[in-house]
Image 1 (cartoon, rainbow, N blue to C red):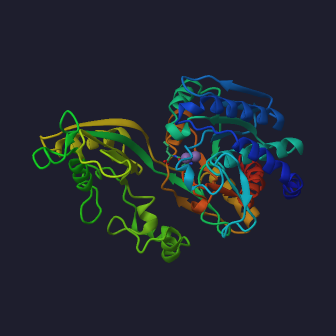
Image 2: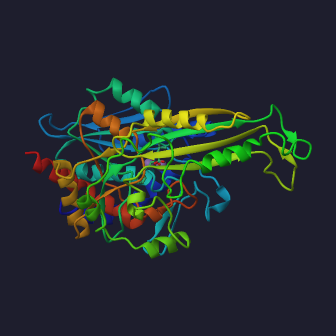
Length: 462
Ligand code: BES
Ligand code: MN
Ligand code: MN
């Protein structure tokens, strides 16, 4: 595998152009207007796996979008790596905040990526990171150095809760049997200091609806005499945190795993600069649960956030009205041992209980999933650490992330194997946000590092 660096250099332009072509297809899973584009993307991924050297590739039909499955089984006695990724992307809006159109990829330098970054929706999350695996696989086939069996499972509904993937995994345990699951759909600390994601938070996502009077009312004629659902909803939401930014839902913290002082001290050793963090976000001060640091708040502690809130008149000018209804979308990020279904129920009970009699409340659960923590003494983690050390010249640091990939906990439950998260994105890559991008350095470094994971995973399994 000495020549992987050279292979990447020689094929760099083609690797970039192929990814750019994939990024041009707007595979937004949340919006049915893009249904054909999502399917076109599945087909594009399928043909890329065929070209790269899979023996067998298929689109597996599901109740939702198809799952691209591909495999190269070289010897049943060798270990098998199952690569997971997703070809769907988040919606691009607010579109007016993009400096170039989200589905017309361009490469531009940034402060953090002086060598250039690819700007497009999905560049980092997850088309760019998923495609690194296809190109790393292409290299191992072309150079006859693939040391493991490989299975690819690339889904098209990750950004909307992976419903069909759960369905698929439960029905295909045999087909998906593996020794380790490998995912690049997370990030790392910086291009100078790689890290391996060892934890993901769970998620409970709900929508709430507060109904006051049966129709919109003149805010002069009725104002003051009936409950205004927007006033009520915002007050209810405000009461979900106390003065220490602790969540007030009874029982919410009951199962939260508390880290030992040693574990917290270890976490605090990762490089982090609060001033730079604040500057990058243009905030005067950080904010969060009392007694915890920023890195603890966004990884080992559960949270509750409003993701959207609406109701009443939001058009141009002023309209004097008391709306009949108000709405909010709320996410709770959960930590290991918290059960997302239980938390959803606790939320629902509590939210209904705090509503004044003057309104009706409806809580609609959307989706959710369990958190995940992977051990660092596994063969998979050790192989990944060795691979990063070789390509970055520095040992990676294990880091628990605040994001969620709910399907990972289900993989462990159904397929009984550990997941290794080799993420190459940066927090500043603006995933889910306007101007999402992925560093050219990161993309190529990923392609360089992945084959080494296979090499060491095979060696360590001997
Ligand atoms: N790739 C992200 C998750 C992620 C990003 C984890 C960076 C760690 C670091 C994934 O595509 C995602 O956005 N997940 C959603 C949850 C999903 C159920 C919609 C999330 O975390 O909000
Ligand atoms: Mn993702
Ligand atoms: Mn995402």
